[in-house]
Image 1 (spheres, rainbow, N blue to C red):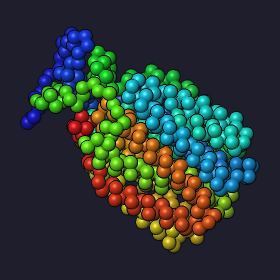
Image 2 (cartoon, helix red, strand yellow; image 1 turned 90 degrees about the horizontal axis):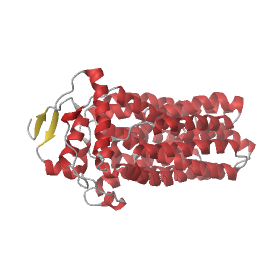
Image 3 (tube, one colour; image 1 turned 180 degrees about the horizontal axis):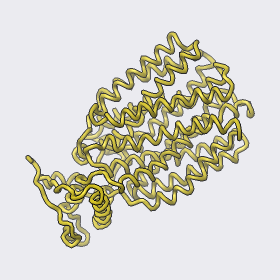
Image 4 (tube, rainbow, N blue to C red; image 1 turned 90 degrees about the vertical axis):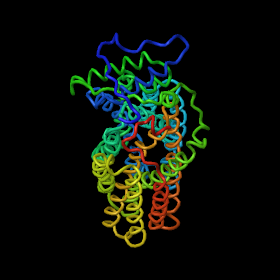
Length: 479
């Protein structure tokens, strides 16, 4: 193969590359370790890591959306105004902004696994705090602090799962993991629809808190990302984990293919040599374009999706006069649609590509929302059908962005790049619900859907400037 040479890796541990001298960084050995990771097919080892980290992401989604299915009761019991509702929704996203920045920095310095575990612990403890809150102000504070954990878990988990994946099939591997988030949203809707009317609003917060504390223990037992360990110069630890992955793959697939090494060792070594990540590197000439486009994508996609997702239960109950069980049931359909569309996305994203899927989904969402604004907002049936479909297609972009963003940065700044990108979703998700609360009273529901349609159209323009990453090794994309 041009530009590569095949190298058979001996099975015996004694045949591995010798450790470098103290204080040095063995670039050849690091390159070899990454090449070994890249040749390993998906195995039960990967599945276990995906399930445990995915369970944390499930609870992340559950905690993020639980308030939406609690608000219809609190509006009545606490006599909340639309502005107060908007601020309660926004509180979590303000906290998520802080969490995304803090925990992505911690993940670069201390590792993906302990950072994800700490974020999960925070969001679980504060979920129990929300259940004990008895006033608007206390619930606001608890949701604000809980948001720090919610915002910290997702970008770190995305970086971790991305780093476990090889180039071939990475899209499907990651998207099947990422599906757990909309499944968590869907479960929140279905559980909230059944349990909130029966057991009261506190039950959702209890269900989000107790399992999360147990899951934190399982997270701490996960192996660290070998790519991160290589980037830190901890090659012995990385090799020990890679041996475990190889052993798992051999039990399932038999002998592994030979390793392919680059003939450009200096270029390969430069991509993985330990270096301290810095925020400003995201806006350096090499990464500025992809960073700005990523920020625009995150802001526009989540402005629409989270604006719809958080407000629809309350809008169905107040504007369209559905009783509480019917309002919750109608709102839960949005997450069912997202899961169905995302399942299709998982099995075709490596063929269609990240850019084409994002452009098409933004455009379809814009058309559906514009139709709803111009002709359908007066019909409950039209709102349920069009809003559900619009959320489903735009919501699929959210998952694609969690796949795409870790791909476009090198390991030394993958968590930081992803965390800072997700901070734009937090800002957009805080601003969006607050704007809906203002516009519903002053300009009517049609203006809300028109605003979402315009933002989706802007997202399509940004998506057309994405770089394509399918079937490319992470170290190649970062160069």
